[in-house]
Every structure is written in structure tokens, then in C-alpha cells.
Length: 323
Image (cartoon, rainbow, N blue to C red; front, side, top):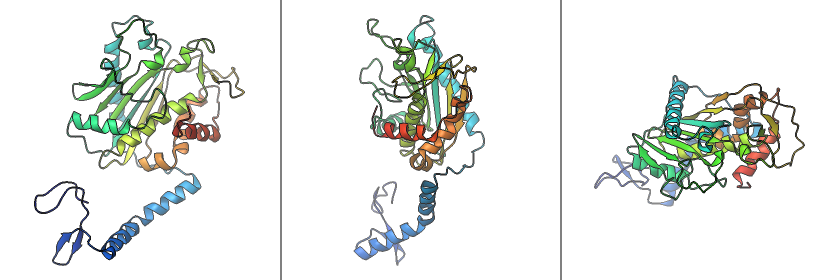
């Protein structure tokens, strides 16, 4: 399929096959289309069979890590965090936009992506990924109100939903996001914990809901995979997630649907998780990808071993929009 127009030769997004001459023309008959499709199926046969085997056996094969990709993503996350800290610097110390009880941040890098030529094109690609909303307050939120809408800053697109425009409108840390995107396919977002905004159930800074890390990171990773579909040449998705303010928090079930215990505490304040699945692994084996990524977080709570069923059940709810 042609990627661009060439006047009087080929047209963009049209399919061409090689014919005697030699020359390239669009398929004209049913037989020419059947031959083309047969070749496509044969060429992709091994990849297709391997995907089926991966789904049936529920395995996630390790991918070859690109040199310096993790370091580059870490540097991007640090720069984005400094930018957020600049924005909140003049706010009171206990302001919700500063996440006084801790926060979680996610950063993604589309490895192998051909950069978007302009920030306008980057905005278009973000909007394609934003068409699917899996939760009420979705990751990389694009607000309609101009005060919180995405804007250009240097060579990035960013949005700060924590900007105060109405002092009478009460918000929690979980609704004060900051996010940033770059033309070469890197994403960053930071948000406070929703558990800290429901004092009638748990005191602020005291607990982490058992299911929420699965929902938070799962939604971010699914957004990154949709974003990856708008780029050429993406091989895999590098991930860096950091959870802060964990010390002395305990695991709980905020909705009360599970018999949870309050004796599994974290003695660690900050945990950073890294991974690099392929886009296909995210699409076909998300449960396994998420279990491998998040298990070190759960283990900090007195060696809690999060079961496979937890990830599988919650991710099915997330993708089904049952929040």
C-alpha cells in the first residue's frame, strides 16, 4: 500500500501489485486479489501461529531491550516531573495539586517510532488514542474547558488539570493530573491517589486499594498501545512507573467486595517498576504483562503475592468499561 501520492504514478493509500512489464498496478480481478491475499497470509503465517501459541500457553516472551532506552525514558520522566514541580511551586504545601500524601507516575516510550513531524500531528495522534475512554477520569485526559485543555510548551504537548481556576470547586489529588507527550512517542503522567480522597472509608495517606494499581497502570498501558498504533515502526513499549508515599500504607478493599486484611503494610516509601513488552503482547497477553510489572509493588506489602485472578478479573472489567 502506498504511503504517499506520486502524481500520475501512484495514489496514497492504494494497493498495488507487480505485473509483467515490469509495472505496478492495482488488482483488477478476483484472481489477482486472491493471489495477493494468499501471499499476505503466507508471509504472516509464522507470526500468526506464534501469536496463537502465545495466547494458548499464556506466555510472555522476553524482548530484546534496546540499549539506552530505559535511561532515555528515565531522563524524560525526570524532566517532566521537574516541569510539574515548577507549575505547583507557588501553591500551598498541603494543596491537593501538590499530592501531599504521595502520587504515582507513569512514563512510556514507543521504541522504534518514527517521530511525528509537527506538534499538530502529535495532537491528532493523541486524540485518536483518546477516543476510547475506559474510566470516568481517564489517563491523559483531554478536558473541554480551555483552562485545562492541552497546550504547547517548548517541543511538547502538555496538560495540567491541577491548575486552579475556581477556588470554590473542590477537587482531590486524584483529579489534578499533569501529563506531557513528545513527538518521538514518549508519554508521562502524574496523579494523586484516589484512596486519599475518601476519608469516610480510609484516612488520607493510610491505604492503597488492592485493585487500583491494576486499573491505573492498565489504563495507561492500553492508552500507550493505542498511541503506538498511530506511529510507524514501533517495536515495543518501554515502561517506567513510580509509586511514592507508600510507607506505612496498608492494602485494603475500598469497595468492601473482598475480605481484606489491614496487617500488610509497606515499609518502603517509593517503588519504581520497569518493563518493555511489545505492542502485540499488550494486546494478546495483557494479564501476564501486568502481573510481571506490578508484582514487585504488591510484594512490598509484607510479601503479598497478588494472584493471577486479580489481574485477569480487574483487567476484564477495565476493558469492558465496568468501573
